[in-house]
Length: 277
Image (cartoon, rainbow, N blue to C red; front, side, top):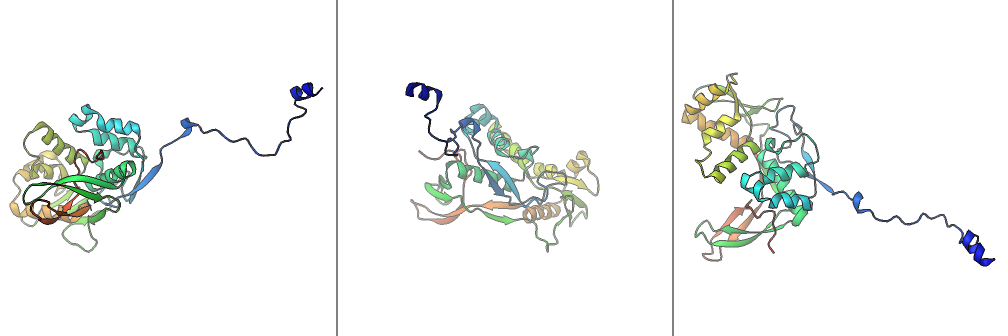
């Protein structure tokens, strides 16, 4: 009888009302995310850009797949490994990393590196005085945001659509311009990879000037830049300096060879995403 009772479940323990424990399913795991404060605060993006007026951007933590991107020799040789990484970790769709301002790109890379490998970054820095290589530790936890346009400055103004404007002192031309972004960084990288001529100041001006006295034709802009008086060039360079935000992570270098002391910026070298082992 008892044998049949057990088989029919008649002697089973009464239910306690507690649900059975759920088994962990690795397939349901998703990478955590983090918000990156943007040094630009969304200033300098043209109206219609996804980051126009935004002060932060959500990214996901790097994965093993992202490490594959960084170690892909083909992507490294083409100079697009970091672009592919940012495409992978930026949550919001429709954002082209090449269109991000340089300071914002750096802030994203710093946060990605910190969440992946830790915020203590050991790097080699050459002494500015004797050229000796020194091993230094940089703290990536609290980057300092500097620069960016100020409301009370007169040298350059910002329009509602995200375009900067200024009047050149010599030619008296009014020009509209944007700030440098990943497009300029990519072109500079290609120059270095292909060992060609430098990406000159005038080349950068031609990329960033959007119009001159209302004329947006590239041929007109290029011709003017090629003949731009030095006084106008100096003024424009000052405008870019005033309007461009930056990210600073600095530590004091004390050279082991000559004892020279100097504050140095964290180097964004090829080993930035590979901790020393």
